[in-house]
Length: 424
Image 1 (cartoon, rainbow, N blue to C red):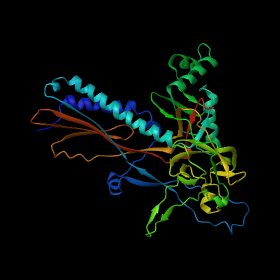
Image 2: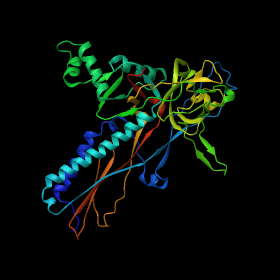
Image 3: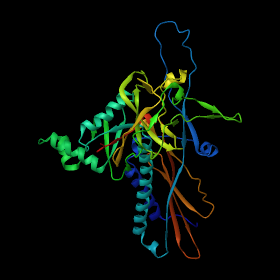
Image 4: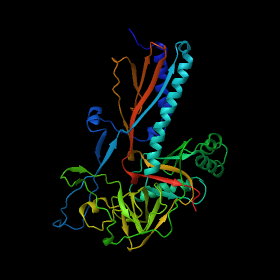
């Protein structure tokens, strides 16, 4: 039969899958969303996933005035990445199966890196819990701040991860190697000999050989926001919205457009606090006493920008605001100061709870009756990898490609954060 894979090609592909399983560090620490591929195609590769309810409780036995509507929030998940690595080999080059295997290794490394970078970017750019450290990474005290901000806001205490760029990670390992230095101490020995940190302050730590850097915020110190009720910068969550044509559609409640005095020099990714706006525990609704942190997602005009998370302060008094309140104002003003936190250009180190980020495996329907030979496989994470080949009878060139179709979603930005070191 024509266009059949040789044994050497099958072995090469099996090695590619082994490489994917070994290299996907980030994807092993997030959830995998199992989706119906037919349903995804019919919905333009977008699926809305309901979020857990947060309910309100009241004092006393009389519930007459407490029966309120319940709002269920949902998040859109999209399979938006289509990555492929193509190459060609001549009839003479194919005599050396070793070279074919080496090229396959290169294809594996490239797509594995693409998947890891996509996951890292989502975590780093959409994480809203911001931990600012004024000195270089030093060890326990740094990660303990991530633990504190998680605990104060009610983030589950299991499956917590932090990914640090190599220099910050090694600084922490140095701290462990010296502060606990004694012969036979496993923690100290591993830190000294392998630059290994491990589990610290309830977080499993991972070292990145690439990362995301964020430039220093350039927004002026005089930028303010109106936090009075009349300023209408508070957010009321909604399950759906109705367009002017009468159509009903779901609402993505992870983001909010706010009006500020100026957006001059403000950039996406900037982190900031608002004067007198304190974070609350998401279940108990008690104030943490710490300022709530926000991230800029997009600058729209000279006075409007999209932020995450929304300012759900309960100022509107709706049932949905009571359910999903995430902050409270100890005082309000027409010109509350915005203070930017990323004051020095540095690497972003994301930390997250596993359920906050999801990878969506996709599938490409490659026809085997159209002149292609196709072989498929899945990684441990459920990501499908397809390898196909086709030979040109005119040139005797054989064309190969390795494809992977996937998506990454930050389902809950308030369960994802970043820590930056060396900030003034």
